Length: 187
Image 1: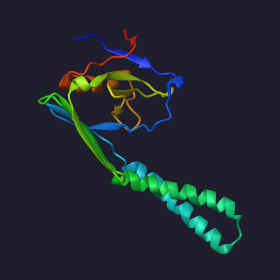
Image 2: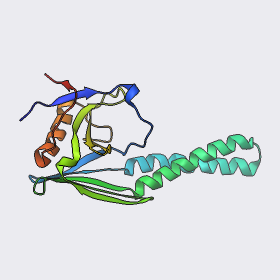
Image 3: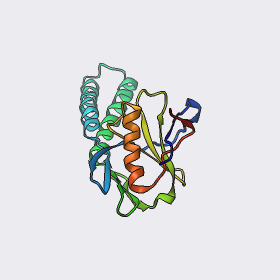
């Protein structure tokens, strides 16, 4: 087995494109591992403040005691929070690393539609483990040859330790043959 390497990315490398949410380990068998996006907590955390802000805006608008520009800003923020919670509640996203088929199968369904694919290991540049955006948590990134990146972790923020992150990366690597790599070697 080759050596596993780890990297820490710089802020200069950050792009302004949408990053898919981190999928967390939800099921493990000897032949496969399944990662899922779990958005229920986020949905609840954004729905309650969103409804409160929309209620406050409605009350202030009806009482006509508040400047309308402030109401528009607060109302838009409340609407974004409610939208975010609806998006998270309707999102169904998972990734299965299959050892028997030696493939990765991805499924994503949300308010915008459905994306599904199954790819062989050759379609991936590798699996990187690193800290992104100066985070204290470690993240596992599956990097496709076409530039798509999928993020995995033990919880919604990644993994607490390098050892745990490497363990998750190895589970995917062992089942699919995708190499775990990055620029800086670990001891």
